[in-house]
Length: 360
Image (tube, rainbow, N blue to C red; front, top):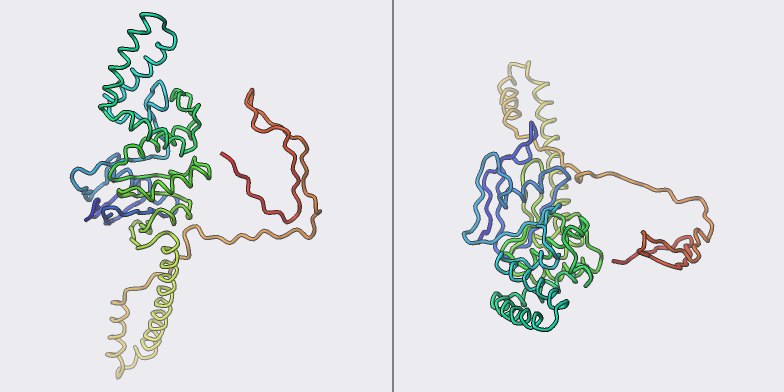
């Protein structure tokens, strides 16, 4: 069953057509990668699907009752006292209850005697209401998701305004994963993830029971979490069964077949043209020459196969010689203000080394 069906979609910016009579569908529980060269309209298409942007013409049909979660590249989280509550705020009622609990916890810490007892009784009432809204379930899940996406325990009590742009994007992603909608639309979800968080997200998405359309430049991520590929090519969408690596193999084979067919057609055209040029002035062959002229006119020309979008060749020449010891650092330290990033680090870099630099 198709969760989304787009029919004859047209979208243009100025004189440039992004999509021209484009149609495609995404079935229930499919994991789809949306790929294409930069500027071909991948983000625009996601925005059209979720209703944040309109197509110039055509229709977007979605199954009734389907819940949609959209992660844009730049997010705007609401201003909430704590980042943890921003992620957990599944409903306004739950969010209000969570905020009240947080306020009461602070007041109880600083209260004494009768005031603390009254606050404690009120806390019990609010806590019971919070539990009836499944708040503690959300709290446990939200914490697990936030830690999985690379936040520290100390980050959970930060105000949203104190978060960096990358942290806000990760917090918005955490909120979507907590909500677990029927349809996830993710625009570059791996941009601000370190390696551990990326591995965690891959595992979560493999367990996710809904439908997903994702844009990413990370081919290994796409290979791990998708099984269908939608390729934007010449203002059209072409659907391929398989992940990104499968798509590349199929596309390469398709281009070879197209190039071969074009070469055969070029031979046929040359043969027809040669006959026409030779016999068009001969009365005895004029009728045959004219039929070949008409055959040429009716022929649908096969376009040349494009290599890959943005393909280029790059060669970096090896140096004629290099010393064995390229770099040595002794007791190196670095800090931003009061925050020390590293201290007393010593290392050597030798010729021919292949080193991965990892860390959150």
